[in-house]
Figure (cartoon, rainbow, N blue to C red):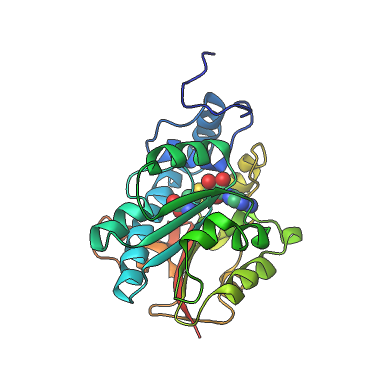
Length: 268
Ligand SMILES: C[S@@+](CC[C@H](N)C(=O)[O-])C[C@H]1O[C@@H](n2cnc3c(N)ncnc32)[C@H](O)[C@@H]1O
């Protein structure tokens, strides 16, 4: 295999990652044969998987624009992934170029590509860190140098927490971020659930076991607990296509197959 020029040193191209599988599902080019093989297996167990990725990206756009409408001008995007069409800073800077956007991911290709596209873009930063170590993110000079934690922040955790196993204490992790935020900050979450996937048995969970990122789908009640200390805004935690759809692209044709619940909430 020839090494692509965008491949950072030290990446194991044989070990698939959620970031690169998601990139492939969205039509991106920063993925390896091993990622594409997993994505194809996922599509075989549930052809709706590509739609799940597309609906998530559409939700990201709506959530960022909603938070901008609430006066938010700073974003902390956890598990930001490989940059693809409609990144947070692109959406936000169309409304207000002074908006500050900090990205965090622990996947080398995602970080390297983010560094490349953010070079020379004011008011942005990318930090390589494991989000389950909140102090590494919250105490990082890169993050503190960009974001003002005395002012409201839009905390984004999209298609992320289902990669965090129970033993990494996802509810404590989110609470650490919440406690660092000023009142009026907002949290946006999308999260896999078994309630909204029409795959056979444990198809998606089993297939992802061959990657760096096992998946832990959660129930609506469990996902709601991520919002402790926040008030969910209307329409609450719903199948992702039902969260304030604006166009037919946003709204799926069958919310029972959305794969993810999504919600946005305001810190009390
Ligand atoms: C499916 S992508 C989602 C990208 C983006 N948030 C979106 O919704 O379009 C999930 C990302 O979360 C990242 N991720 C998973 N667990 C992580 C962790 N513990 N720390 C940092 N990033 C993580 C993966 O590397 C991947 O880039």
